[in-house]
Amino acid sequence: MNARQDDVTVVGAGIVAIACAIRLTTPPKQMWDDTLLRVSPALVAFATLLLLFMSSFILVTEIMKCS
Image 1 (cartoon, one colour):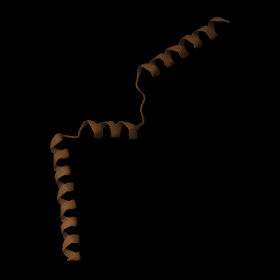
Image 2: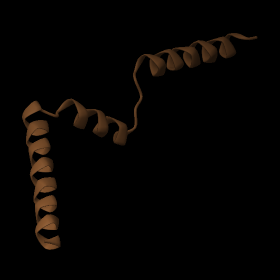
Image 3: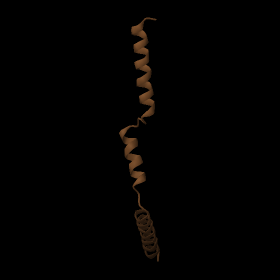
Image 4: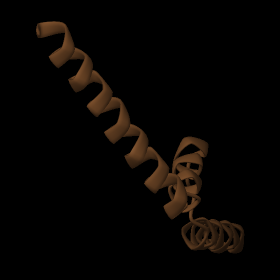
């Protein structure tokens, strides 16, 4: 191999090392990770209460409709 090919090999290896060191993720993956990390416990509690309220409301209306 001549000197030019050796230089290209070294540069190519350096680019691969940099690419491996940086975590390359797609924008949708980054958005999903950001969404998961920003969920607060208050939001989870509110969503749970809302789900319970709506489920009980539907159950009560179905019971009233049948009787």
